[in-house]
Image 1 (spheres, rainbow, N blue to C red):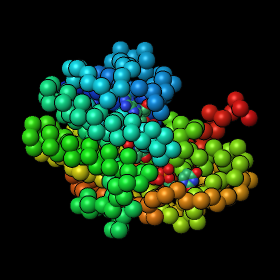
Image 2 (image 1 turned 90 degrees about the horizontal axis):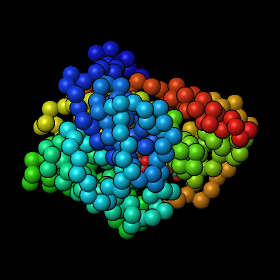
Image 3 (image 1 turned 90 degrees about the vertical axis):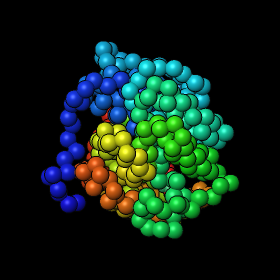
Image 4 (image 1 turned 45 degrees about the vertical axis):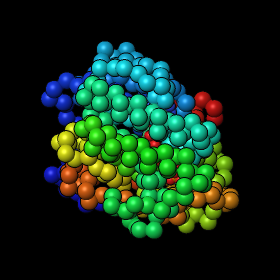
Length: 330
Ligand code: NAD
Ligand code: UDP
């Protein structure tokens, strides 16, 4: 990957103190974000209903004087005094968001209305965790922000895809109608430590299967592609985006453009974890996008951001994390 030393992703402290609300803060992405925000000197309120998140993800932060945890479901309104809101609350794994699809839509639609309403009342800025799923099964490759997508509105993924698309609409309507400062980040597949063992997403599945010597379950022929971004890069991108001037709203893609087939990913994980696991093909899930790769020129130019961690480096760290987690069971 090109090394551009001007485009540094490195951590810096905030100049002014900030009160920051992170919804979904006990989840995979949210827990890393809370930790980084606290490290930069922010006062962080982590809000979660613990549907897929866990207290253990933020265990080290519980005693920090600038960290507070609130058990709350964003589908219900709440009043808090904050300067910034990162709205991350929503299950992200297809297994979890399809478990209770109506709840998934409520979280994206009613939850986002509640958070935008809060942002409006207290004049906070809000970053919405949108997704590459707004592009559906894309017919344009790689996906730029001005591509409107190819989404099945009535399929099993629609509760998530259409919920997130509606959340984007809400952000822009609150921006136009109520002058709420918004940042719409379209996050592409992100992975790393703190992913749940039973999350159901491909990297956590493959890594645990490889470490346990079980077959790696490839859905379909494995020729479908994804582009995986390591968590540390994503957190830096999200914070950089939040700190941009008010007229920068997005939508903005954040992800690693290194595209890989699911079959090659499985082989790489077997190799890196020195596993004897075999590969087992299973039926493909409905509406599984065939290809996905972010176009990140906007993030490069506006945020001076680009991913730093190669897939190999990120996978090594992730394998080490899961290996540690599984150690008591082996
Ligand atoms: P995650 O499932 O690990 O975290 C989601 C968190 O939100 C969990 O802690 C969960 O308990 C909480 N939550 C869910 N519904 C809630 C509700 N109604 N009220 C309060 N809390 C609720 O998923 P993640 O990977 O950390 O994803 C975080 C956000 O980023 C999500 O909005 C997701 O759509 C978005 N995103 C993630 C990825 C990715 O690859 N990780 C890609 C695209 C978008
Ligand atoms: N996948 C797979 N085996 C698994 C889990 C997922 O082959 O055990 C595939 C899935 O069908 C998809 C890709 O891996 O093509 C990424 O799936 P994931 O659920 O991680 O995220 P998505 O990008 O589909 O939301």
